[in-house]
Image 1: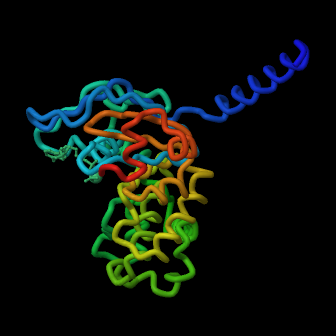
Image 2 (image 1 turned 180 degrees about the vertical axis):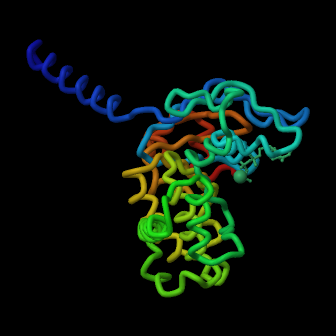
Length: 275
Ligand SMILES: Nc1ncnc2c1ncn2[C@@H]1O[C@H](COP(=O)(O)OP(=O)(O)OP(=O)(O)O)[C@@H](O)[C@H]1O
Ligand SMILES: [Mg+2]
């Protein structure tokens, strides 16, 4: 290869990587996060950038701190007695642990979907309208109706429930309930959605539906999903973070993590040697 073609190739590669970097805007930035439950330390110096409008999967053996770290991002650990979070986490550059920060507002910006679908014991309509109502996002009934309809549509549930909006959310199937919880989460227009094993209580068909939905939602939201399923992480995420014993061992493009991990612990986990 002569100098000219080499430099052309290098320029092409460089601009490709710059393109990637520019596209990969960090939405959530964590720096040296340490979490303690009383005396016990659950996370050690976790630093990570979460890229906006993409799906990041958190994987790792049970007890390695995935849920603990997820809960740091919307300050849900505040509700756990004896839990202390140290280090810094920012959302679009705003320090989410700043004393002046309004936690209720933060949780509207960073929504959460849990392992077990947990609709309120209220109607389908009220499950979705509650958040927008308490956050004052609608100016009247018509606007609220619109938010409910568009949220249910985006969650892929509208067609199934449009004629029974006043029936209890708890009367839906498990997969429908989880889509209702996703509709409830997106109704307040969050920027980030945290999902802690959202499919583990669902059958394969309902799981496939949620995975499709996650893929659609990433056009507009930054999504972090904790999963025990490597297949799921590979199917839905663009980036994967592997945690082990409270340490973030490795973060990379999902394909790289699953085909060419750089750490032996990651390799052992993805090949099923432990976990
Ligand atoms: N409320 C709590 N009080 C005390 N210790 C806790 C609490 N929640 C979690 N822990 C401990 O912190 C560590 C990390 O737990 P965490 O739930 O974050 O793990 P995880 O990776 O989500 O596991 P799993 O895959 O089983 O959900 C574990 O040792 C756990 O026992
Ligand atoms: Mg967990």
